[in-house]
Each structure stands twice: as structure tokens, then as C-alpha cells.
Image (cartoon, rainbow, N blue to C red; front, side, top):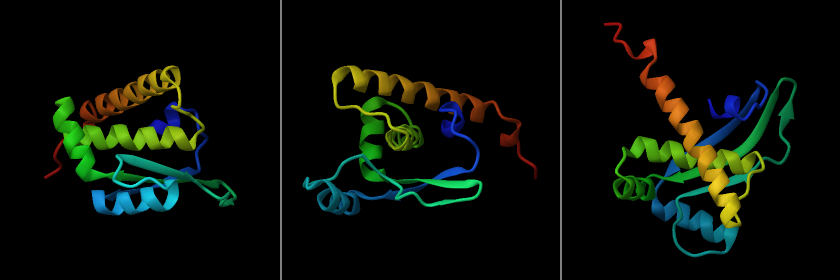
Amino acid sequence: MALREEEVPEGHSVSILLTDDDQIAKLHLEHMGIEGPTDVMSWPSSDFERENFHFLGDIAVSCETAEAQARDQGHPVETEVSVLAVHGLLHLLGWDDQTPQEREEMQKRVDYIVSKALSTFTNSDNLSSST
């Protein structure tokens, strides 16, 4: 859904690692030189491409941090994991959040995509039981 909302052509993909604070803290130190856990990280691909397939990169989400943030925000952890995954994806697509204006624009886009995805999912006929 997020790739479609960003008008990324079919055949593009990402990998998402759902991990804990200890593992993401190691990645944070290794790749950013910053100690301690963070909520989400992303790394663009080194141009792995085949015909009709393009790998955009990797996203790592700390489920522990997502759980704490979900509690603070008053929504389900699944929603927070979705927010973080979309945030990481937008970084892979070139979005930045270094300035207050960029952060605000990016957060609005994340909120829009997650809201639309959750609305689509909860209204889907695919949720009906087939048993």
C-alpha cells in the first residue's frame, strides 16, 4: 500500500526486520555511531536490480520501542509498527526529516498512508472468516 501511495512502480520491494532494543542498539552503533536503541532505521540498497524487480533496501523496527511508543500514543502496537515501517520506507524513497518542516511533512505523509492502509484493511472483505 505504501509503495503504491508513493507511486512506486510494481516490482519494487523492501525487507523489514522486526527486532528488539538490544539488536537495534547494535545496528544503531554500528551504522550511525550512536549508542542506544532507536525506533526505526533504514538502509538503501546497493542497487540490487533484476528485470522487473528492484530492491529498495532494508528497514529495522524495534518492537520494544514500538510497544512503548504505542502506549504513549494510545494506539495498538500494530499501528505503531506500521507507522515506523512507513517512516523507514519514506526514507528509502528519498524523504528526509532533518528540519522541523521536513519532519512535519514526513509525519503528515506517514499518517496519511497508515490511515489509508488501516482503513482499507479493516473494511476489506478479506477479513471475513472462511471457516
